[in-house]
Image 1 (cartoon, rainbow, N blue to C red):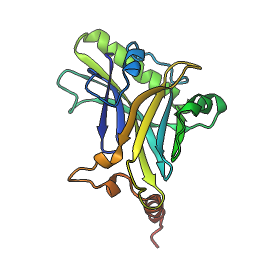
Image 2 (cartoon, one colour; image 1 turned 90 degrees about the horizontal axis):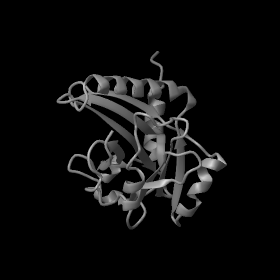
Image 3 (cartoon, one colour; image 1 turned 180 degrees about the horizontal axis):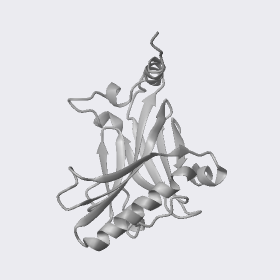
Image 4 (cartoon, rainbow, N blue to C red; image 1 turned 30 degrees about the vertical axis):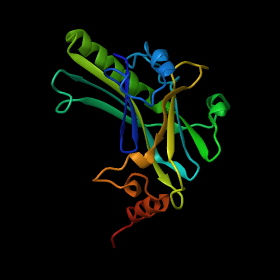
Length: 217
């Protein structure tokens, strides 16, 4: 698969192996170079780690950090794309958290994630399916790889920029690579969605979940 492209859509930070990464100004050049040989069709799901740095009053939504792997044929990305989407599992293991110590900042917190062992088989099956299709239709089959994070907030929005940074580790015991650095979430709202819609209060989500467990009598 070709090099990594990063794009910001609302609060979803996606790293997709499609075209060129050069257009993404928030991605360090060192990361572009380090990931030049990363292949989403052969990576080991047991090794992959992701992390996100958020303002200290923010936290990822429950099940909101996801891995997406997909493939499609020419002209079918919007109509017949094959996509696997899995919620990543949070990790506090020393070997996963310690390499992020140098990324800590005042007023921010870091969350680390890994693929759940129960999902290894599904990922490997998706990789195999892509490679088989690529062999049948070389040059006409394309793949994508993405990690996204949806967050909520505790209390009011703090003053100043709301900076978000994401990280990826693809090698065992390797360093985390900064994928997108210091995206200001205040610049993410659109006409359709306000900042409050993009980063809802965690209490609202909890209330919504409780309401969904009610039983009609």
